[in-house]
Image 1 (tube, rainbow, N blue to C red):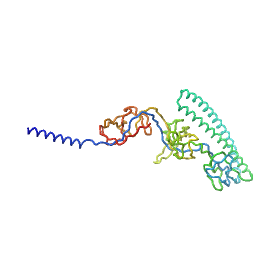
Image 2 (image 1 turned 180 degrees about the horizontal axis):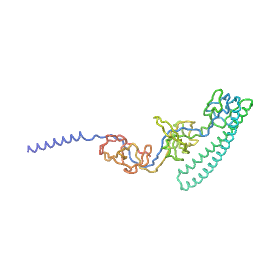
Image 3 (image 1 turned 180 degrees about the vertical axis):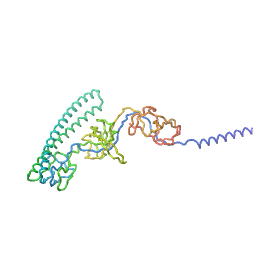
Image 4 (image 1 turned 45 degrees about the horizontal axis):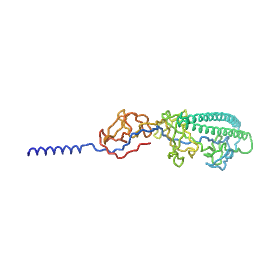
Length: 402
């Protein structure tokens, strides 16, 4: 009996020691942040910083050398066509300069012909866009095309209307240049008095390059006039990213709450469209001193959407691909193991690593094609402390996007 009791005590002590050893050596609980894999829309976009640019604008330059006396106009003043901007008193010209003035008259006449041709082309494109809008609207009413196609056709009409307006302004400027060139030629041949320079278009004075009286050489930029209500955004994209962008792509632009019109969804953004990708790239030095090949992408902005000026900053997100239904998880859940993407999945208070196959990758979300199911719980920002079958404690749950 005594021996049996000793054996039982020994077994109890041994078990207690084993339990204590296991308790001390067991893996610690890891604090994690989790999210749910969900099915919903996914937008793949490229983010970049752009700059606004007034579409219809012109420089007022000195047609000949002479003494420039500016009028009392200031930057931001609204002027109409014919408003006096200043007076230029031409300097005496020699025979060579006189021939140059004569050549400028011929060049200005050729510019008028070119501007008229562009205006005709712009009006033809506008008529075609309006006919297309009518056809697409009829198809949209019958349910034959998506609402996005109807919206795209409507945006195309607005864009072509802006092109016609810009073409009209270019023609007006070309005619003004011809009048100035003729007046400069008259001054070069000995006509008395100064040469009055007037506004070639109705708009706002964007910049005054020569605000004080002084002698200026021929071709000196004096003022810049434009219409700040008609702006576009120039986006310098890396050429590798530009290859993924197509004309007509949707663009979300943020100018800041103080400068933009709030959309119905409450975000401080406006929606534009990619209208042109310039054919020639250029080299630009990055902030890290690395040469980059970039190309300018031009984005149209609705005329009533923003109240910004020339050369304002714009944060741009260009949509390159969209999916209506995708199995999405936050990009922060991804880890790399050798050549395979993996995700830590939570089940019954423990985690396991799963290899996954990815589809499209957005800014914050990724499309998982294989390896997960909707409703699976995944670990965000997994650290080095995670091991297969490790116990976890949830510190935060990130809500799934709509």
